[in-house]
Image 1 (cartoon, rainbow, N blue to C red):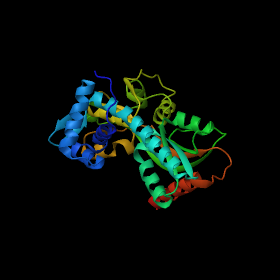
Image 2 (cartoon, one colour):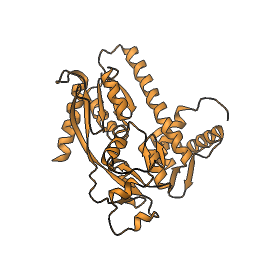
Image 3 (cartoon, one colour):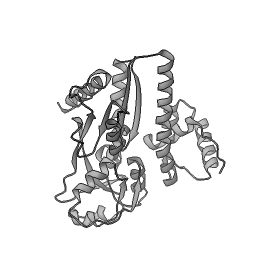
Image 4 (cartoon, rainbow, N blue to C red):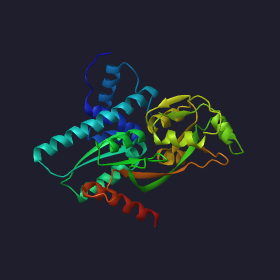
Amino acid sequence: MTRRWPEITVLELLVGIDDHGSLSAASRVAGMAQPNASRAIKQLERQFEMSLVQRKPTGSTLTPQGTVIAHWARKVLADALQLLDVAEGLRTERAAELTVSASNTVAEHLIPGWLGQFRSLNPDVTIHLQVRNSTQVIEGVLDGTCDVGFVESPTVPRTLHSLTVARDRLVVVVHPNHLWARRRKPLTIAELATTPLVVREPGSGTRTTLDLALQDYTRAAPLLELGSAAAIRTSVLAGVGPAVLSTLAVSEQVRSGELRVIEVAGLDLDRVLRAVWKPPRQLEGPAGDLVRLVRRTANERSE
């Protein structure tokens, strides 16, 4: 494999295919003609010497290798965006800056909308976004490397203030051909615990919530550990095995029938998503404005 830097645009295309399910949609988002986008993806596959995209008449999906590359591409793009924001901030000498750290599920499904609204109301604020797992977000808030964090973990340190900004639920999902999809009775908690699952890495809020829910049961070793909900979703779609994911991450696939939700008797995986910050209790400045906007948006949706 030739060790040279891939183009940022082709990384955007790869992530766009994972997010939107087709090369045409990904190319539109990236502002590129589809023939050029197709050539760029093929060039990246030649560079990495592996197939990254499965091309179908109904759209495009990532191969397992493509999913892993897309996961790391998200991190590269997030850092590149931060670089551009920093450069813009230095160029215009803006005084107002906001560093936000968000767990993966929140960052993938909620933060884009929140920051889009915030930026429209506060165009002079330079925003830096860090995408990490919940444990790393909390560490960043504690050590002061971010102004406010958004986490999905069931608990937060007592030294931090927190506010519920959204709610979601974890569900067990399988490929429609999985044996569990033909069950007539709900799964038992013990059966779930003793089954190898495709799971998030330790430290993620999804993993912590699941581990706490099953802590009183004998556990099977993970079938596979992956660093993002998108990677896990792709693995389940490929028939690798069952997984526990946020409804935010699988709603479209469940609606289309590509994934099946399996009920588990007596298992409560409802959870809250929180904003967290260091004292004082009253969060001021751009960070406070963002949290209030997010909270207001959540209240409007619940009405």
